[in-house]
Structure formats: C-alpha cells, structure tokens
Image: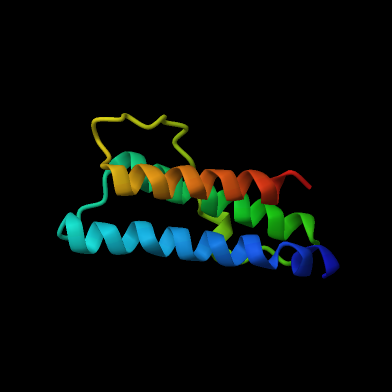
Length: 99
C-alpha cells in the first residue's frame, strides 16, 4: 500500500495523460484514434496492471484481456499534441515501472 501511495502523483498523471489523448481524439480527430496512439494507451494499461500485480493486488478482469502490439510510433501518424502527450505518458510509466 505504501508503494501505491508513493506513486500516487504518477498514477494521477497517467490518468490525466490518457484522458488527454482520448479527448484529443474526440475533439481534433472526430473520434478517430490513430493505431499508434491506441497501442501506447494499451501498453500503458498493461504496465499499470503489472504495477498493480506487483503490489499484491488482485488482478482486475480488465487486466487479463489487455494486450500489446509492440508497434512503434510513426511520426507522420500523430500530431504534435499527441506526440507530447505520448512522450509524457511514456516518461511517467517509466517512473512507475522502475520499482
């Protein structure tokens, strides 16, 4: 529990960044999420599930079905806003998974 409390700011940041990516898709892309953005969101979800598992938490059903594609970003598929959000999300996920 202490570890989760220590990472609470990063967990909040992940939530805000993922929400920002989804909001951007709704507003700027009329609901279309680029595949590379979707892959980043899925990868971060899987990492969060692994973090929860490392805390000894029961794995929620949503974690059991999370998958990753391992695809890299293609710069021409994402705009600057998405690129900044993705970079920030990946940086925060690195902090969380460095336990």
